[in-house]
Length: 114
Image (cartoon, rainbow, N blue to C red; front, side, top):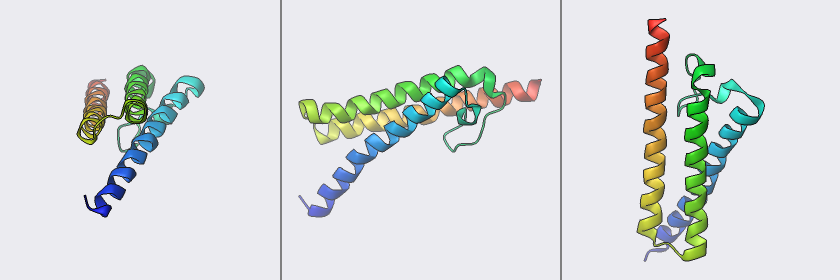
């Protein structure tokens, strides 16, 4: 195995924890301080009517962050294979993206009709 691939895999592994931390930070800011700036799409753009969709964005961030954190811990605890943890992390990240897209589209549709 090439040494650059090993370092790339290590960087990806550390990135799992950084992304999980970002998701859990957003969830904490929404839940604990009711900071509606974090009720946003994946780019960070605030959604229309954030009060109405805060609970959905909170759930997506909380579940996504917890899932990524569990994947990262499972790599160390049970020694998940590279293909397993990268596939699971990819599934979580794409699900996070698409769930936020659906919530954002719903918010825009409701905002346009009112």
